[in-house]
Length: 236
Ligand SMILES: Nc1ncnc2c1ncn2[C@@H]1O[C@H](COP(=O)(O)OP(=O)(O)OP(=O)(O)O)[C@@H](O)[C@H]1O
Image (cartoon, rainbow, N blue to C red; front, side, top):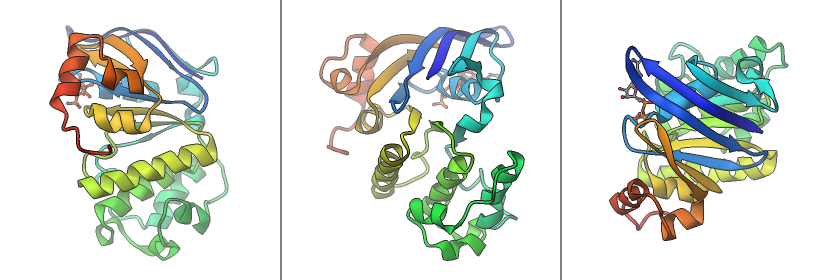
């Protein structure tokens, strides 16, 4: 289980996170929503150990996250810029395995994310954005993680592709028993994938609820705003 407790962070004198606390249970998908600047990416980066919080603790199964990197992996917003343009897909997938002294992944990993293994010898510029995001998801799976932190993984994609990647994430979670911390400004996308949602405003948690309750009975005014601001037709 991921446990975030009393998390605080400042950039210079500006506080960006204050006393943030939540958990992500085994096999659970938790959404982190909030408008731009709420602190979502900062939390995601703290969870994967890319940022050091000023206060609080983040543990995975009781171990500080900095020491459980293999089990907590991240998928970023812009798949194209998060792949090395000079590396083939094969190399991008081999690198995390090498870092952790694991065997190089085979073609089956590429198949699992819905791609043709022939793509292993291609470069990112030869792939579509959707294919790049599938490769980034595959890359995050190389170390056999238990938790994926997904930071706006759909925002570079058009709507039909968003739905496809959501389906893939849902399937991978069921097959592998993964947990997700899914960061998004879009409460509908989060509700489509997640069991539980944490709502953030100005670096504070203002509401936490089951995904279904959040849409039908939002409690906090900011949650109501987020629900009202999102087009309702998608993923219905
Ligand atoms: N490296 C940094 N230096 C200074 N301020 C930063 C830095 N990174 C983020 N911030 C500020 O911290 C606050 C939270 O940013 P963060 O990116 O975590 O929000 P967010 O909810 O992910 O927003 P968005 O949806 O726009 O990505 C913002 O006010 C942002 O300007």
